[in-house]
Image (tube, rainbow, N blue to C red):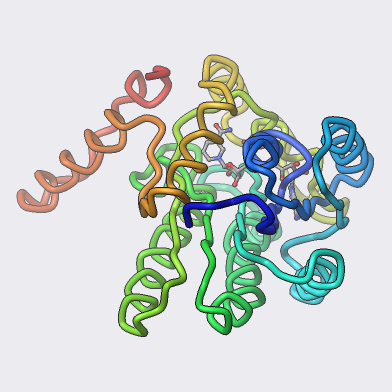
Length: 283
Ligand SMILES: NC(=O)c1ccc[n+]([C@@H]2O[C@H](COP(=O)([O-])OP(=O)(O)OC[C@H]3O[C@@H](n4cnc5c(N)ncnc54)[C@H](O)[C@@H]3O)[C@@H](O)[C@H]2O)c1
């Protein structure tokens, strides 16, 4: 999609972090924005700030894990702006290790990171297919390209997003559709992702061991704080829409290194090797 002015973008997790940066980048092109987020107060603040800079934007409090709320989000986008052209299924939360993470936490992580993307695709694809125009951007992660110790729930959810997005690309190609899909796989980015438990429902938090267990708190905090700026990610997403790129990599060396190494392990039947330094090093 070359021309983004007067188009409408729906961005989940749009109140903060990467989602908000995407909103600012698209707003700079004159794109109308529908921001969805579970954090209502932050969402209101973000909408006010974008409006004060001249953006056409509405905020819709939404839990992406709940399909009824995502359907209401689509209805609101259509009633407010009369169409939807870009859908960023971006809301996401961190998770813990495979060993010891309670099932309720797995369900919460998959509810947001996987079902959030499924709900977004299932709800918005019919609209985009009908008009034979549009671009879906699903936020995965480098953690969707290689397993990371301590982040098994998160990695599993992000692998799902990569697989879903690759499959969707094939399906759109086979249909001859002009609708495009991209999958965003960043390494560490300076956001509040390491504090995801702030949005954990109380009944899940009650059984989660300690908030600190999420995302190997110390390592993740240091890595996130040393990460790249959200603006770099937003620029990469904008280019992907305009240039119709599928994989959106902000840490290209780490992404290709992981993938090339995996081929060697697969051919040799060897277990994967973890290079923690490479994963935490901002590139
Ligand atoms: N920051 C990183 O290092 C990094 C790296 C790779 C991928 N990602 C992915 O980027 C995406 C954005 O995360 P971020 O880094 O900006 O973190 P963030 O915590 O700053 O932003 C996430 C946003 O999602 C919202 N959210 C959480 N649960 C929600 C729900 N159930 N429904 C709707 N909104 C919800 C939060 O309120 C927040 O505004 C996520 O999918 C994350 O997994 C982040």
